[in-house]
Length: 305
Image 1 (cartoon, rainbow, N blue to C red):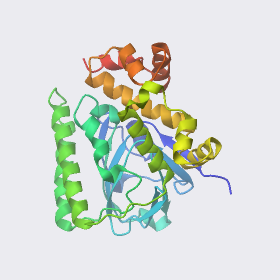
Image 2 (image 1 turned 120 degrees about the horizontal axis):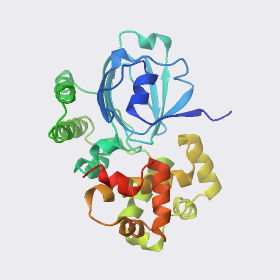
Image 3 (image 1 turned 180 degrees about the vertical axis):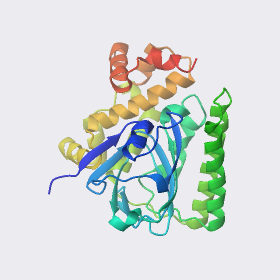
Image 4 (image 1 turned 90 degrees about the vertical axis):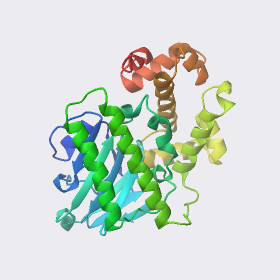
């Protein structure tokens, strides 16, 4: 059986277009009425990957979402959290498009750069592949989340000024804090799925970039495979099937994520950041960054000044 096609949605504007929505008012953040979404005919035939965060609460979707090797039932309505570059699949029936309701909050990572949330958002467990329980909310909890979502929507509907990002980030942090409370209420003891390769690889790379291993150079495919106790070829085939990316591309995404953080939150020179990340030559870092982001490191940093 051939692996499913990978459909990557790179921008929030592209998501709006593919789902039959009007152009977003802000290119980096959007609140979507789930009832207005139009699903494509092939939605159940491909694996989906987003380049932005998706926090959503859905009702009336008579189908399933496959994520991190687990299935989630949306018949009763759940709150769900997806990080950039994570793979999911929607298995919907035709009647699923009737009487659906809810909201989706789409946040591009670039909206978070140069804020505290840029470094803390990954600390929330519910964004990880390892969490295998959906979050079912009580009626009271739903009202709480909807109030926060409405505050975010109203803020970016208003005239954007120098306070807007700070206010919206504050609302997002509040939403995540409430979500953490709701998860704690629902799952006093949480079962973590074992042997999930994507989760293990993501954790391994996060640990690598937080350690002194970068002094040894950039993480290699061979190193990752060795640490996961699989062959490089097996890892590459598995990762490409699950995410549509090679192991090297997965590593590069982590490098760029870390580079953006350092460029936007420190005064280190581009060369210092390149060496810190494990590059032997700063030119190699600049070339990779420009290929992946369409901007040079200096141009990216200038957007925050």
